[in-house]
Length: 257
Ligand code: 6CM
Image 1 (cartoon, rainbow, N blue to C red):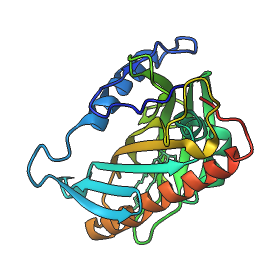
Image 2: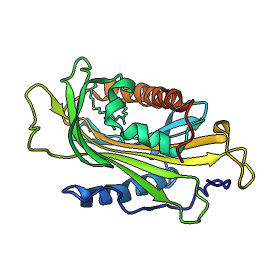
Image 3: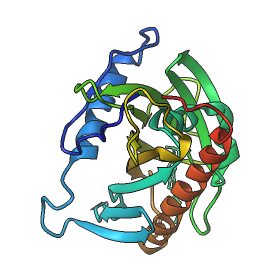
Image 4: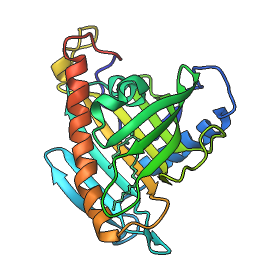
C-alpha cells in the first residue's frame, strides 16, 4: 500500500511469471513486453494517426484507421478511470474465465480449453453473429501479470494480455471465421485523495486507471463501415459494463492490492 500516485511517464517492468513455466511462457513474456510498448506509445507521435472516436466522462477511446486488403484492422486504445476498484481487482476479473460469460454480452459461447498455470489459460469463444457477415470465433491465451513501477511506492500495476494462438484441438471450423486478437488490459491503482502513511485506505479513495489496447483482425471480409460503427459502440459499452460488473463484485470485500 502506498499514497503516491504512479508517475505516468515511468514505464513498468514485468515481475517474473508467478505460475509454472509451460509451452506458451516465452510467448507470454513477449506479449507482455509488446503490450507495455502499446500502452506507452504516444498517441500524438504521428500526426493524424490516432483519432478520438468516443468520449464519455473519464473514458476516452482512440483508434488509428488501418486496413489490409480492404479488411479493417484499426488498432484501438482506450483510457478510463474508475472509482472503488484496484488494478489487481480489475485484472483479476478480466482474466477469470469463470466469470467471462457473465459480463461479456457479445459472446455466444466461451470455455477454458486448457488451464496452463495459475496465471495463464487457453480460451475459446464464439462471438454472436453480426448480420450480414459470418460468425467469428477466436482461440487465445490469456495471461495475468503483475508489473512493477520499481520506485517502491507503486500501489499496484497489473496487466492481462489476450493473444491469439493456434491450438491442435481447435482447428478452424466451417461455421466460423477465425478472428485474431492481441489485447492488453493495463491497470494502475491510484489513491485519490491520498491517505497518510500507515492509515487504512478506504475503498472510495481507490481508483483504477485503465489503458486498454486492442489489435483485432476480423479474419475475413466484413463491411468496413459496419465494423467501425460496431467497434465505436461496443468498446465503450464493454468498458462501462465490465467496470460496473467488477465494482459490484468487489464493493463489500477488502481491497485486493
Ligand atoms: O477484451 C474484450 N473481450 C475479451 C474477452 O472476450 C477478449 C476478446 C476480444 C475479442 C475482440 C472482438 C473480436 C471481434 C471480431 C470481429 C467481429 C466481426 C463482426 C463483423 C461486423 C460487421 O479480449 C472486450 C472486447 C470488446 C469487443 C468490442
